[in-house]
Figure 1 (tube, rainbow over the protein chains, first blue to last red):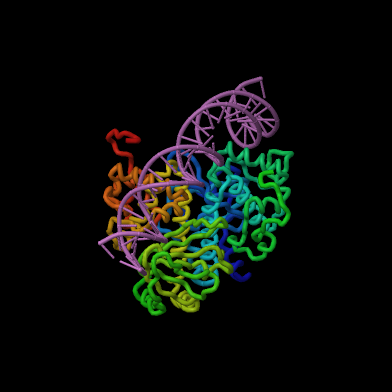
Figure 2 (cartoon, each protein chain N blue to C red):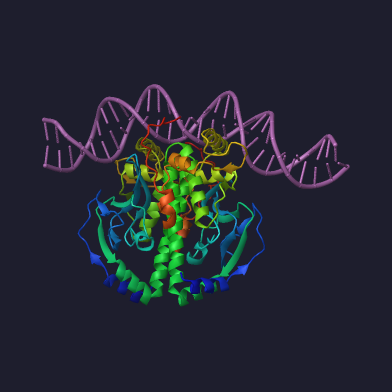
Length: 240
Length: 240
DNA sequence: CGTGCTGTTGAGGACGATCAATGACGGTGG
DNA sequence: CCACCGTCATTGATCGTCCTCAACAGCACG
């Protein structure tokens, strides 16, 4: 998208009051007639299962639409909702405005399609993740993704501002186990040992543990930094 | 899409020789400059992990593009490939042709976007699936999805023509365990007991076991048949 | 000063992976 | 016609990861 198109999109934004951590970003998707764009903070979309548990499938950062599927799909899944993980600022764009934008600027349609494709790509990765052996890899991988996406929008703070419960619900693990894994990562000096927050102090090691390959994120400029980390030549105790 | 647009798409198809079961439908995605449309048979796209194991993330039936992401994403994940699970017929469409189609018929672009959104929707569901308790539910859910998608394109044959290995690689289970689950389903008279192939003889029960709710497939006409099956009023032994 | 929420720690148990071997079937070649 | 082989389905036994339940500590909040 070129600046002209971005400007046109910005014109259509309707700013909303701040959303506090834990609150719903969008109601039940089906009712609203607009899409929601995240301006700051971290949000996620999840599905509530019958037993009440929460399954997070996507994370959203500034610049992401949290509920684009409602625009395209005739009857989106009603059990899907989005929640702010930190305090967030959001804006909405009416479906009608999107329609006009797409009609006038074909590149906007392409960009939105591309965004959907990227989300699918991340879903694929998360699916793989569920499998990739030791829960430790899953958590590490999740953290790598968060860091990479934060960097992509200029956030270099090494603290990932989400709770262990959120990680558990995204990585398909119990909170208890996530906690133990985080402690293991702390012992390895991958995460900060001091505080209960999640602060990454050794990204390289984290990427190695995760076997992380950020290419699926489709953010070319990040690839050199996050490309698949080959196993180091030096022998290294496997489980330290 | 209206017929005029469908016709235009059909004009662009280049038919390919048949692909035998087990063969690659597309090479390494990055090299080709065209998208691949499945005309008949069943295919899947998967990612090959470092340890050689295969993780299936999407199934494709007639009418699905197997590698649309290559068109949109600058550098698709190279570890992703597509494989025929049964003998398949495919056709290709050059990226340039897609570009022209999208430019001329905006609805084509919209339809492709929608297809991507649907794939994302199915990925989400698969992600949930991994969690939904007993491996039995996962397998049942997978089978329900296959049946529903087959019906959507007019295939009513109750035999799901894929191997147990394929189910295992899609449901994230070991083949051995998948086998045991299938036997359990056979004992429940949900699957045919006679042959080693997977033949569903009690769809309703299958949907109940799976807790299947087909709405995520975005196929309105199928919903009545596959809508969330409420627990039956009559008391029913939970584990029979 | 109680009440939640998040993080932390322990013990026991279940589900599913892994390894290993066997059976059923179809094709191929002697 | 039969021996051989490959693929896929089936079965048994053992073991490990991760879940569940339960309790407690720190901290913010009213």
